[in-house]
Image (tube, rainbow, N blue to C red; front, side, top):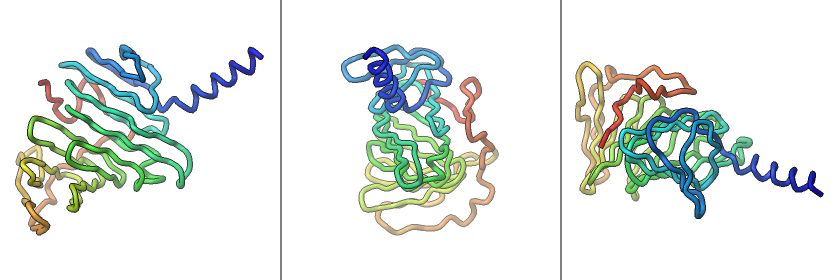
Length: 227
C-alpha cells in the first residue's frame, strides 16, 4: 500500500511539474493555490503558478520543452496551461499582469506554434519560432521580436511583428517601430484602424544572436526595467 501511494504521489508530481527555476536573482515568490512560496534555484513549477518578482529581481524559468522564460523586476507572470506531448496535444498558455518578460521558445514552438499563446492586458501574442519580450508599464505595452515572428492580436486587429520590430500599444492605438543598436528606434508605421503602411526599410534592424536555450541573467541582451 505504501509503495502504491508513493507511486501515485510520484506520478502526480511528474505530471504537474512543468519546469524549473534555472536561475534567480533578488526576491520573488510563487503563489500556488492558497500557499505563497519563496523562489529558490531549481524549484519545480506547476500549472497555475503565479510568479511575483520584487524590484531589482529577475528569474529564469526553463520549461520541460526547453522554452526559456525570463521574468524581470516588479512583474507578475502566470503559467495558465502547459502540456508537452506530441504535435496534436502540446500547448503553452501564459499571461503577464505587470512588468516584463522575455521568452525563447523551445520544442513546443516548433511542434505546435499555433498553440503557444501569451496574453497581456490588451493583446494575445502568437509565435512562429520566436525570441520575444513584452513590457507592461502604466498606460502602455511594448512587445518586441528579436528572432522569428510574433502575431499580436488586439480585438479584431492583427499585427505581424518580424525580427527587429516592436509594437507599442497605448490609448487604443498601435505603433510599430524598427529598432537598431546603431540607429535607435525608428517609427515604421502607425495603426489606429485597419490600414497599414509597410516599412520602406527594415533590413538594417538588429536581429540579436541568441542561444535557443538560454538568456543570461547577469548580462541580458535587453535592458531590464528597474521600476
